Length: 243
Image (cartoon, rainbow, N blue to C red; front, side, top):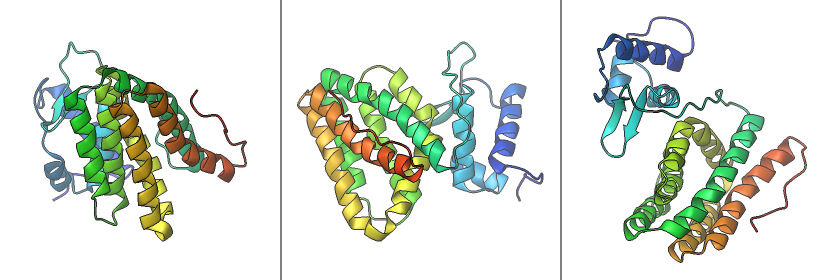
């Protein structure tokens, strides 16, 4: 039975209750918290709500996600990224987070191209292959796979702050990605073919160690969506790509 009986934003309620457990020591520093599936069952909410709640806790430095291992309570002496973005739920907010993302990821792909390792390239390729072979009509699953591709590139920079930043704003990035996938429903196959081609160009440039080509490919990949949002808002579109 759900432990949530209050009215209000479900994610905020989950955040409050998990924060109380962390503060009280029920979930001590360094301990793994229950899986998303268990939290969904306990709180009686959807995975989307739990994902949003965990993202909020990550942003506030209370928990940290470990690849393939789960989510853990942050150690008391660890320094966390304190980057707060209000929840986005409209086109302007999506445009603003995409502008920020473009600036960060332009540097990310350039560093990935310069610092790539065989292991990092393999992880990028795995993320690409998974997204390309995905067979689903669930926009959230597609968005998560898209995000994982960009996250693999951030990890290839060998600068931990790049993947930490993307993970901290994962909820906001996912909103933009879900919006793009849903808006593309009528031309689903052609849209997937297009973004896979763009992802392939980014991956190829990184593999070849060509930072300039990687930046151009990334700019081309994100600028189109950015300009579409600007058109919706009747604002001037950007015509500049990476130099």
